[in-house]
Length: 88
Image (cartoon, rainbow, N blue to C red; front, top):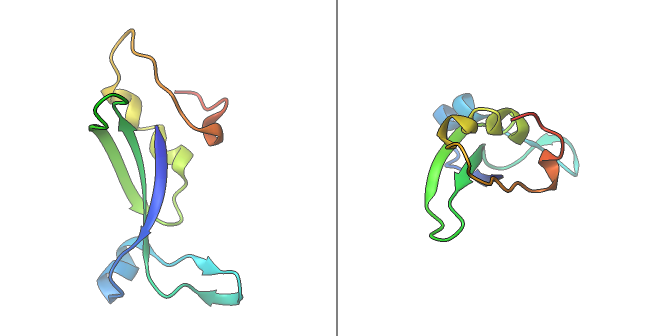
């Protein structure tokens, strides 16, 4: 399990759907709206088994909490350090 963010088109619809993060230069917002994604990936093939998308203000931990629905009994799930102690 892991997560990432990426920029989307600078449109009113995308800004309404996903929001814009702040920036490091003050109180302004970034140039582009951003989508956050958390995904469950099969290590051997890199196949995306499941994913959750949300606006940039939704945290990865929140999104990852929805992914166990795609895990099978007996599978080993690896996650990055942000998920230490997250109840799945």
